[in-house]
Each structure stands twice: as structure tokens, then as C-alpha cells.
Length: 326
Image (cartoon, rainbow, N blue to C red):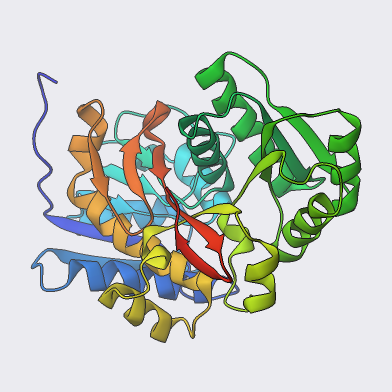
């Protein structure tokens, strides 16, 4: 704390994919970033990570006066950044994290990782007073990463292990939970809307009905879900970024319009907006333990290695609609 100084933004460099396959992602993040910046006079230079190697771009940004770099976004580019000798003497907010993340004095890592959402799921289930947690996860990269993050956080909170069940077919998870002889527990279902729905319907037509408090992630929340889906999901709680939890806000309406109501793109818009907020408070996150801000992607605070953690909003399917969950 002794050498702490409030963040002074002279000039910001934004490193995003602005051509190539990921251009659509870079464009909406850039839009969210610029909308949040609004009429702030800080200079922002934008660099296309598909145009050159990251080392050269960071060097160029520093020569042009940038003292905070936001990005890169793609994991391969974040790994390039971690190996770059140019990351000395500049603050960097990477917009992703990889297995190679380590504690570097002036680097923080922020993104919409499934791991941070799963950790938030463990925290919510614990806060709701549940002592037994079961996780149903698809047998794939997303399922493995999310389930491991949930189990790790659950162990930290309760000193006990979550019962993780991986499935190839959703109904396999229902059978596995039934065979475990559960009397009362919380179930965290990982998967897309179809997988989560199939597991929920399987539970409702089995002996497990009314024994499980069911939770899931934002992956189940799609603009394509209709009244039948909402009705079948009765009682299920799910996490969501605050932007999508408040449909009456001006930010929601702007993002909805820009992203043609695509929720995954709207979340990236929110991420761009929060990247601006994080950049303006970079030193505070890096040096003040417990420092947090309320953003469009969650309540944000720095965890280990300055990995930005997100506490999310919680919603619930009730009476054929979505309501705030308590």
C-alpha cells in the first residue's frame, strides 16, 4: 500500500481482434468500451491483434504514450503477451485468462470465464443455506472447467466435497443422482438450455422431485426460450450478468439493439463497458485488498494473481416468467 497511487489514465491502448474470425467479438467489446467511456477526454488508441504480433503492438502503444493497455482478448494472444518483454512499466488488463496466468506486478486478468460463473454458483448455493451440493456437468471442456471451479470454491466454503456427476446424455445425470440416494441437496446443472431442461424434466418425473433446490448458469438463458421453457423450469435459479437482469435499463436497450437481442453478444458489450471501468481503477484493484465496483457483468473484485472475480445477479423461473431471485 505504501507506494499506492490512484490510477491516472494518460492514454489507453485497446488491443482487440478487429479483422479475421473474431472481429465480431472485438467490435462489440470496443463499442461497449467506448460507450462507457462516453465523453471522457482520455485518448484511446485501438490496435488490431490480427494485424501484428502482440509484442510489437504493446511496444507501439507504449511509444505512443499508453500507460494502460486493455486486451488482448484471445487466449493465444494473452499467452503471447505473457511472454513479451514489453509488458514492463505498463499496466495491462488482459481480457482473458489461460493456464499460464501468473502473478505479474502490473497485469490483471478479466473475462467472462465459465470458471468465474461456477464459483459464483457455489457461493450462492452456500449463501442459501445448502450443506450438500451436487453438480451435473456435460462431459466436455466447458463442463470440466466449470465443475472443477465449482468444486474448488465449494471446498473452500464448506470444507467438504461437492458430488460431481458428468453426463454424455442429460438423463444419465438424473439416473446417477437417483442411484446416489439423495434425500435433500442443492443441484447445480451445467449445460445449454436444452440439456438443463431435459435434466429438470427428468427430475420432475422421478422420485427426486421436491428434494433438490436447482440452480444453473446463464448458459440456460436464451432469447429463444419461450413460455413452455419458463414453465418447465419453475423454481430454478440461474446466474446472469446485471446488464441482462435489468431489462428496463437504458444500457440493456442499447445493447439489445446493437446485438440484435443476442444475449451472448450483449454480455460481451457489458464486458467492454466494464473493461473501461476496470482500466480507470487499475491501481485500486491491484493494491487495495477487497476493492470492488458494481459493473454490468457483476460486482467485480480482484482475486489471486489479480484475476477479476465476478459476483452475479440471480434470477428465478416463477409462474411462467423470470423474476429476481432472493
